Length: 322
Image 1 (cartoon, helix red, strand yellow):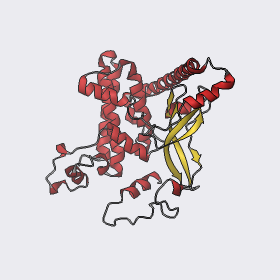
Image 2: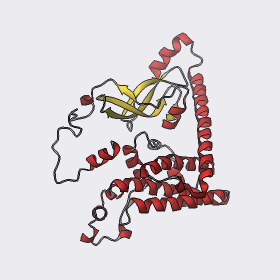
Image 3: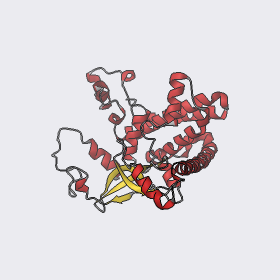
Image 4: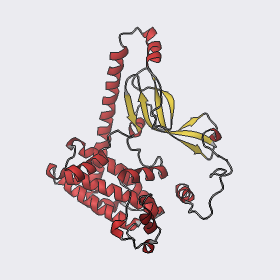
């Protein structure tokens, strides 16, 4: 079977070596560089998932592929070349659910994602945004480095390009800090343009009545939070989880949004603020009010499990809590 972690990790390393070699060749090879970096990231994400079980990287609606992943492809004579696997975005989302807090969140739906955009743009249209080449590589590094730890792969993965890996990571952090300051400055300017002409004693009332603090549909939960750019309340949003040790619900932030100044920050930017907003925060509600069937004595709720079905949730939980 070719859906095994070792095979995929070796493939990832090969593609990353080609990506960094193309990157060092200069602007004429940047298209190959970003494409190969995206493929390398996808293969390592799949290596992580396949180590848990090969079924986690196949298309769930394709029964022959699931049968092959279960080691029973011979029942339908499934050919290796016809097995359908998930794409980069789905692989990222599945791995992120397991490695919450250990790999960065990707942008929200409809937001640009240079890592996938560059890979797909080159593969399908021969195009990439040259201004985002460094960002593509730093995004790859921030995903790949923690995956190497999870897979027990050492720094040899980077081969002769270890020094380049370090330099790209530093440049990426500095570029992200510059983008954050640009965002904050732009948000302050927007707020001033909208409300600067209003006397300070009346401004908060006007802002409160004109700005609706509503949670976008794709966000699971949000908490009102002071905006780091303007004197208004924005939304710190993300997913809800149970802290099993304290039996309490916590919000794991992913983004911050402020309608008063149009500020939008991702998880990496939340951690770069003077007063960071990326840490988990307690939500003042009991777990049973948030999660249906919650039982502190039974992590899997009140529903009786199907003894004949594979317990994939238990498999994932065992890995997360190992």
